[in-house]
Image (cartoon, rainbow, N blue to C red; front, top):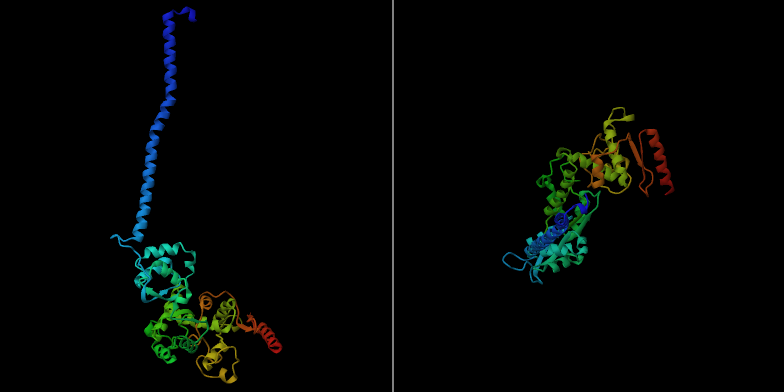
Length: 386
């Protein structure tokens, strides 16, 4: 059937139906676009509201950090008055310093100072120590003062590793003005500081070497408590049981005093343990340590001076040429390297060691007497040529 077979009316109806069908199909695309166009303003409104909410939150946070809820400005007007001694401890963050400043009455609140600290790269270089500041300073002035080393107050003392108590007292007295006699008297009742009673009856070796900032009005007791506090932290951080503190410090002090190179500390500790246990050539019998450092301690000597026959023959309990085993206690203040070595020495079968170069501190270790004899010849040759 074709168009010629249809009547005019039928043909008209067919064409109308086709047009309507086509129009319905075409309307689907524009309708979707119109829906998206209607939704877009809503989405934009939601995004704007979200941005305003976030901005409001950040603004609120800034305001609450810099202005008190009563509307009071959170910083002093400055420039400050009077004096305030403020200690910046090792490892303090900007927040830690701010809290200390508030506590000492230097700044009013922490917010402005922390913000300034975070945006000042050089603030991270503030040295630990005691600073002389003013009361009621602005946060900016306080930060500037802390960044100026000339504001460091008190006494800065650096105690080297390997110093015995008599040397420590002399140095502390010279740099703080506290009499040596005050330190000696304060050290007599060593257990009052929390140090366990020990065989030596002394706090020798129990004071941590390092840098200390000491207030003008600190006493000998204050200084000892501070130095022992540091040592206690070192012992506990290494998880050394309290009943092993004295032995660990004794062994560490021997390593500290017997060799100059830190890489040799562990070998000295292993040699000590091997001689006490009688390994190798010792055939199970405990050997005397025969350390000159302990003889020096007994004789009140220091440095690398030689020991005499009389000193090595003395009956002093610290004379390890005469007595088997460890001395009664530490002979000096060990540092971190020696203490680490005492806790975890390397494996080895060494029984002997000798320094073969007095200039470099090179030390050679041996498991047999024959090998040790050759090392001693090398030391003697260096001595002869120097």
